[in-house]
Length: 224
Image (tube, rainbow, N blue to C red; front, side):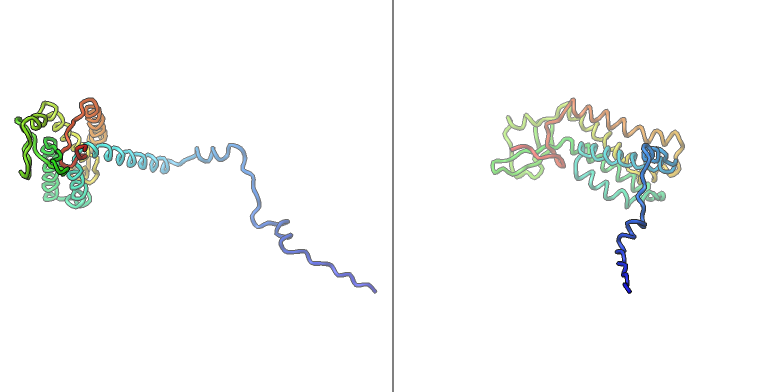
């Protein structure tokens, strides 16, 4: 009597015959259709993300046209003084003072310049109608050299544009906007959205067309 022993098939063969996750083919065009079928909430989130990204890019670009220390001080103090946009009357006064001081700083620093002395150290001064007044007074410059640092008409132009650019940066800050306009109307929202962009575009073009040769406080140092 012969006994036939059937070999048990390996388990992986059963899994191949009856896999736990079956391969499914995706019809052509279904992926694009799924991507095209976006809900209104997803579209709104996408628009908000794009707006936030564009705001950060615009703010960073405009900040390059302003003194670094002034912009840094504003970005650090604005969230604190505005209480993340939920400020009271005292917060509004303090925020107004911050904006005014930073704007005046941009105006004043537009008339500063720098030079390197005989040792190669950078010296800062304030441009005047006669030349350059060195702030620390540790060294003096010759009258011929000082004549190149006199105030010109373009300095007033850059100072005025610096104030406008800083105003655009302040309007890009949502905490400052929420502090002064907690419940803006539709017209106000549109104005607050369009105005800083227009200011940034116009002033950026003017800065390119009429560049300045000064290297004042908060700006790149004078070349060697």
